[in-house]
Length: 127
Image 1 (spheres, rainbow, N blue to C red):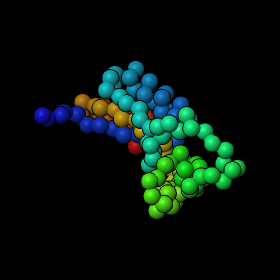
Image 2 (image 1 turned 90 degrees about the vertical axis):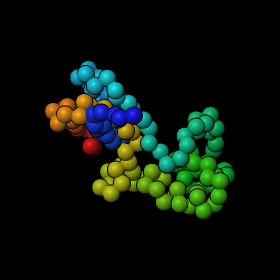
Image 3 (image 1 turned 60 degrees about the vertical axis):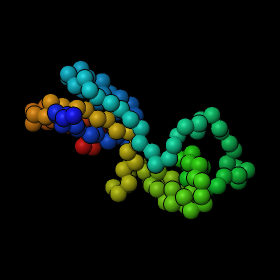
Image 4 (image 1 turned 135 degrees about the vertical axis):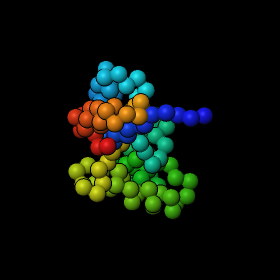
């Protein structure tokens, strides 16, 4: 199977900006466009299982901040080193905290690729 075209990936810190970029891309004719959340850990069940951090009953910083449920202690330590857990995920030049990815499939022409890049950047995304 051969896939023709080129994909353009945009990374966003703000979910609303990412949604607006997807909407604008679709309006511009990019019908194959997708928005995905990026996370080093599974977010499944995170809202369904709230807990009180003041009790001290959490395995690691990654569990407290990112909702991670590492199976081993060493995994929790490594995940705690992630910029998302440390609080440096917004504003730091080395840890941009991009939690959202927009993908637009183009026909492969330079014109379409440049249009998609321009739309993503106009909504604050990094390409």
